[in-house]
Length: 220
Image 1 (cartoon, helix red, strand yellow):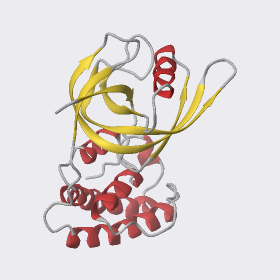
Image 2: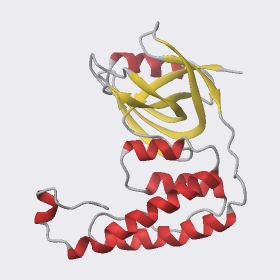
Image 3: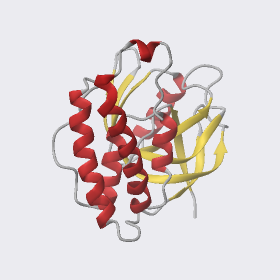
Image 4: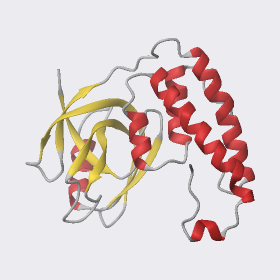
């Protein structure tokens, strides 16, 4: 069974539970928010990754990712010139089945996806929590950034999304995490990514800065 959903193509991957603020200025997205505000709550649209194209302009969004996430509208603040600042929160994931380009903004027929913990998520969740604490510490020590303090959630589904949203990765790897069928598979992928990223962060202070500039540094 599918539902019709307004779509917002982005170069950013949205995960369930993640807060996503947006500044809307293009006519098509002002039309989208106008239509959305006329509907009863909860109000939402689909955020879907761009695989080919751009967020704005004539060449926007030629090819979209198959899996996206609903952004539930929590706040909308209009500007005098018609622009909007909005705050959304990631909700359900969906699979994009069909595109409709007949309106000013994209719409799609989507199939909502279940959120399953998977087979025995406990052991890998425990390992990921330890690796994530180390990652957060090494990220700060290397001067590469910092993450919000606090303990990750106990629920394996929520944990898998918090880790996915917190990791500093490229869009393709983020999208791969969003597409995992269940929390156990997502946590296993995050375990491997955290092992890799911790190794990189561990050697960062020992590498002369020039090696980053001349392209001689490789993660392998």
